[in-house]
Amino acid sequence: MKKLIFLLGLLLIISCKESKKVDYSSVVLWKTYNDSSDVAVSQEHEKSRMRYKLIQSRVSDRNESFRPLYHEVAEMSETDYNQLKPLILEQDIPTIQRHIKDGKLTYEKLVRFFLYRIYRFELDSSTTLHTIIALNENVVEEARELDNLISEDRHPIFGMPILLKDNIGTAGMNTTAGAIALKDNETKDAFIVEQLKKNKALILGKVNLSEWAYYMCNGCPLGYSAIGGQTLNPYGRGVFETGGSSAGSGTSVAANYAVAAVGTETSGSILSPSSLNSVVGLKPTIGLLSRSGIVPISSTLDTPGPMTKNVIDNAILLSAMTGKDMADNKSVGTDEKYFKAVLNPGSLKGKRLGVFKDLLETDSIYRNTIDKLKKQGVEIIEFTAPEVSMDGFLTLLNIDMKNDLPEYLNTNVQNKEEIPMRTLEEIVKFNLADSVLRIPYGQSIFDGILKDSTSLEELQLIKNRLEENGRLFFDTPMDKHQLDAILSINNYHAGYAAVAKYPALTIPMGYKETGEPISLTFIAKPFHESDLLKLGRAFEVTTKIRKPPLAYN
Image (cartoon, rainbow, N blue to C red; front, side, top):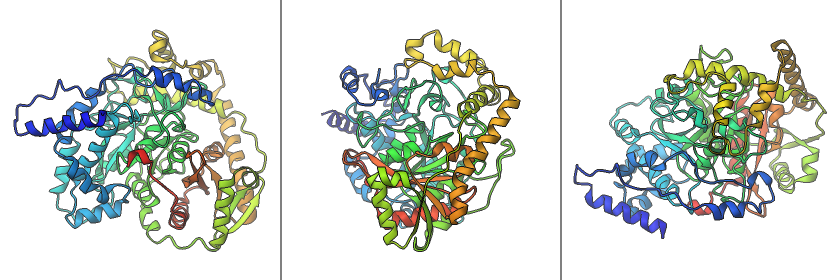
């Protein structure tokens, strides 16, 4: 019924669209609904952090985000949408670009298609994933301009609508990190956004995340933020976790709200939501992608990364964001065209891949996947991981955030009078002024950061020890057995990869009996992204596992 009302509303707008004086400023597209029954149901969930206190944001008016482009969505009829579906839905970027080149599609129609899906599902309380925080009001006009741009030398990302996690600075859209403290935060484009725009990608909008990249409260739900509300998993709304902190990036790609999305990771925040939403996620080597203009946790471990429906798109999006950033002291810059590496990835035959013995014994999907790889001629080497200490990991995050967040606020916030907080302590006090609204799940991690008195000298020793131990964890089997990569599950070993600064690529591996997605994660040594992407593409082509969520077809 709600979907019918939405479609009737579109028809009403279409009937009036010839009138240039139609005023859309008062159109009510979203009405706050009674989510108490959903909250009540969640209290019976076996996972305590999925027992929600609320579903909807209490501070954001979704009409403000959706009204400005409503007239553009109304330009597309249901018939138009269905005709475009086979050209776009679940198609990779090269296929979409080919349709555009052949005249079957335009960049404007491509944008309208994704907007139509967003409005259809996100404005219905029975299907909304609470994943879209903001939309680029100029995106349709920008698409029209690209349709009229004559250029043969185009990056494959040209004209592709991309969604950004809302801790990534974007001119013209606030960068909130999901927090009320940053609700009105105006910034310039982050370096990776500059690169995307330079390559003529279209920034479609911003998506929800675990507030402050899931480093604010212990045991709180993944994918919750005060600004965006509770992100939900399209494979099972309120049934399966979204993963975090890049929850909106994972759910939006899974639901086909854009060609691709960008997430960020400190430890597992790309790998986790990619795995749990059955999409491809890459956590690059630290420094391959710039971190400038991104709300930080840790300048030691933070990195952005691509999240896509397939490996080819992942390589294309990665390539479109690379570049040497003088403002990031770990930025390395590269001319490598990662998407070229995956066009002809070769066979898996003869590859030497390490697998964890304990995972073989405990996870049947992992075990069956390894058996399939053996039949493809892969040399599988079972190993028991060396025991290494991760002591000090939280201390690293604590002290980095205590120092890195003020640096971000001083450097990136343009409207400083509206965002007066300059330290974590000031943000904690701001939250306490209205704890029910601003921090319904508390801020125990923030409290812990303020209590942590570790010196910078002690911190450096911790960083050195953790990096050494993380590399020992992977290098011991890699060097002993001359492995091309190590295979894990989801974000199981994300912490070790984080401190080692090793890249990791996660790819759909299957679905549990409940329907919950599970993924295979490839881990390699620094700056071996091309090798990971080749392996991932070969695995993807061989297995063809990924299935889109049925409710979002």
